[in-house]
Length: 119
Image: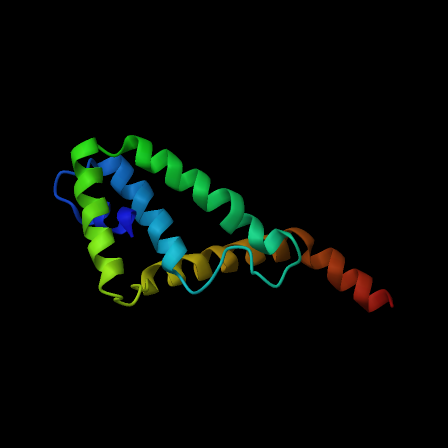
């Protein structure tokens, strides 16, 4: 939530804002880049990727912005408001999956077709 409020702060520099928007959008997205049902790998993004990205972004945020955003996040949590969702991030992640599978099909599709037609 702190990153969410950092992104909305007018004094936030543009580079950490872009990184923060990507991380917050991914975190709030209902779709993961690596689905959770994949054993071990499904939770690696939540255990390693997200905390590492959040740590790096928080190091780039000016202290005054960070203090104000933390206060807003604490107030948000104290009032038990629902976590915001990001439809845009869900669409971006779905597009990334589609690009990845398209690339896989272009690269290995002919081999898969030959393998299954030989069976």
